[in-house]
Length: 380
Image (cartoon, rainbow, N blue to C red; front, top):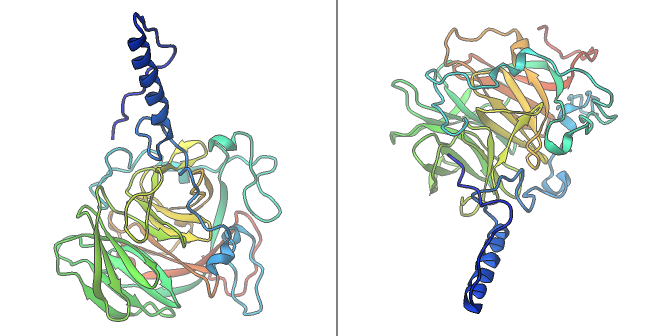
């Protein structure tokens, strides 16, 4: 998408010969000023929606505190550790896509600085944070469990709702897209709904007890009844669909670019302005599967092992983790990349997996380098 021409800057010199000419000029000037009052401004970039489309508190959603994923775990009474699809022309969610600029962000670590971490585990605001240039906190992944995962499930979305685990799969080669329910404790497929239409399914989320499932280039969002996997509605939209999550007030959507988009959960119409996402001051393209946790958004970055935690108001990446440190086997296939992240509020852990991976992993995040003697921790 190319930007619209900017309005002329500087003073406007006009020769006024009559009162009528003066009146016309005054009207035009007022009209030019009024264009800046619209909710959508085509020629002016915004870092966030005018009205933050976020819950006022995480408690209002019965969700974990938004900073929980980044703090050092403190085992609760139950014994569970707290946790914690670019650019102007998004490319296919397949192997043909070239890795986007910024894909190598996992190779380096942000230089530690004074005040990098506050006492509650959130990266502290640093110099330049107002412009989205504060450095991202580096996290490490702690694996506490492995579950089965179908090696023919081309994962596009993963979601836990009301204690049940759901998955959306795409349709590479001769496979059909699908909607699945998986056993939360084992990963076994409990129900499978193949989608007979010739569409490529993408991310999914829950809105008021219904499943919303995106499609990649087909311009349709499917709405399912989770009780019997029957289609109960559908919405049309323009552009590509990659990841989707719901924070209780608004749908957050990715399209493979470096932007987060916002949609009304009732009409599926766009609301607000897209928010560009930056990591250490640089654009972060190829945002893929999304997961809303409290007021923050977690995302996979396509064709990388990067998981990022995003402030959707500023677009700044607050924290990141490199899943290549898992050291777990995965298919020798360029398509079989990390994709799928689901927050479990009951255990305060995440489930993550990848396309055609034979396993899912139950994990939480902690500050990089922190000592960990959790007895449930699996050997890397």
